[in-house]
Amino acid sequence: MKLAHLLPVLSGVLLATQSVHAVEFKLSGQVSRMVVAPDDASGDEIQHQDIGWSGSRYRFTGEQNLSNGSTVGFRLEQQLQSNPSFTASGAGQVDGGNDDFIDNRYQDIFWQGGFGKIALGKGDGASNGATEADLSGTVLSSSSNHQDNWGNYLLTSDGAGGGVTWDSLFTMHDGLSRVNRVRYDTPTFNGIGLAISSGQGGSIEYSAKYAASYAAAKVDFRAFFADAQDFAADAEIAGFSGSVLMDSGLNLTLAYSDRDNSITPDQEATTVKLGYKTGAHAVAVDYGLGETGGIEADTFGLTYSIQPAAGVEVFATYRELDSSDLVGAESIDLFALGSRVRF
Image 1: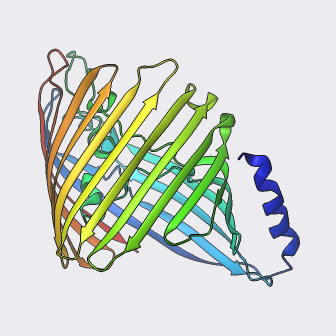
Image 2: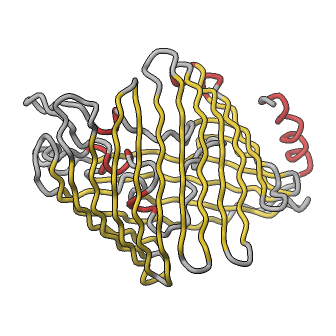
């Protein structure tokens, strides 16, 4: 199923619509910050960072009901980060002081109805988030995508500000995130939903999701395949994630991704997390193992999180990053205290 199969659906939606009033919109967003005390191959200076996995951002969203029962809407979102964590090393942000990072995340239009949902513009590919199923309540600081928060810390240093970063050996892939594409999501049936998207460079992504609540547990399972073609060096990427939260508060999360590259070394990553959640409190221990070109890197983390009010989260995390296969690698140890406030 490619773009040509989406055109009849899109045409039917457009032909069925009639004139409507201007779409009403709302403003929302978040501020995400943390303080990190790291010790890596480049130093141990305290870092004041924006959270890389879920950074500070604002968005405008809006939607309008149409006369045929469908809905049209949009999402316009920009991320504004000062000292984002994915640019950090143990000493890397000290001299720069206040490096800013601006990202135009979404410029997206959608049509939604009984036929499903069609999205056009820059937004999530069909596989974005497929390795991020997590019901533990600790995902802000211990997502399976560990490289987003901690990847740029140095395992080795050449003495001139360079060295081997941890994310060069561990990367949990999620397909193509926030790309210019057209995407179609099927209606959800008994908790099951499918999606397909076609984007720049001829890339195409497929995903499947299942989410449900049972008498004694909640489950969230996702899987994907992405053929990046010319967009990312002819890479083929596949993976899945799953999370189970028992009524007792115990939870288990697993994520896996595999990326086959035509030019650069292949990559593989796995993360497993065991946690307990009660009321506003959550604790979790996780372990991640990644491999790039036959060299492995691993991580161990312990996280406590509290959500004292809707949209407010505070966390404390201890994490170790290491690679026993890399000659001269130093174990990276860090402690982070952070918060995210949504509005």
